Image (cartoon, rainbow, N blue to C red; front, side, top):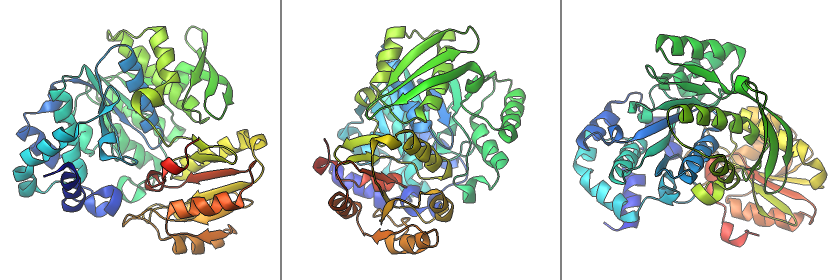
Length: 436
């Protein structure tokens, strides 16, 4: 098969949660164990860091990978979903997995695939582990796909586990209370393996502490390790001061991930870095600072408050759930002086809670409702109908790029255009026509 034929096979022959929803979700690790057994258990051949959480786990994964990479370690990075290219999911030192490896892997595993019929995600996890083992990485940063306890990635025994935060998302699978969701995420806590909790709530802290105690795992709460102040978000950078709550030392950081919410992720990353250094990893201050200021360059992360055009200002953000939208609103308030009128292009998926998100969105913005081209997408016309109940006024478009064209026609040079609501929507933006 050619590379394109291989990708078409992966997308069309295997159930894919990001496109189809819960029908593609497998609630056990059996298939992943089978696939990895067939491959010779590649996940046992390299060190790893395991990262779960409702929001921020992608940014946190990329920041940690950038830091390790800059420190001289050959670093694997597995994240999902991708924005435009399947190979974004699997990287080594910021370079995407080779097309030839994808083709060969799919051919090599076709017999077992046809026998056990894994999901797209289960097979992709096996591919990532196999690639990292073949590339002989020193360490791999592994992001969970959904939840933690039953996530396909949860067959690894990492050197460190990280849970960024807990919020309401995928409630039809993970549970409809924060405690239930925290329980699923806490499933990545392993016996004797330290865990960092990026952010906790009173009702979730006990879930984590109980699981860590039962697992004899040291637990660290990032918000009790570091405080962040003097946060300044600019179009292309975020600057802040970080104080250690242990020794009171304060350092200034400049991040190229410029969303205000990245300050919380930074606390988590620094707490994780402390534990890695205690384990013998060598990360100089220069490597740390350079990596955090150049995450996009080092690992290729996109879609996190990403400025892609000016006059009018145009921003892409993959926020898609209640907590993510709240973070966007905080960002908008912080930069309110930077724009006049706000134009929001948004699309959502059917199995989220669109009413909850719509209830949060500002009523004084101009809206362009659209949809990604996946089965899970909520049709633009339906989203527009739901939005009118919340007094959000706008038009419906069947393609995000048509919505962008319309927004650019209507926006003045000192306005702002924001594209958000779905990872898949952001992934369909034609950047070649919009980049600065």
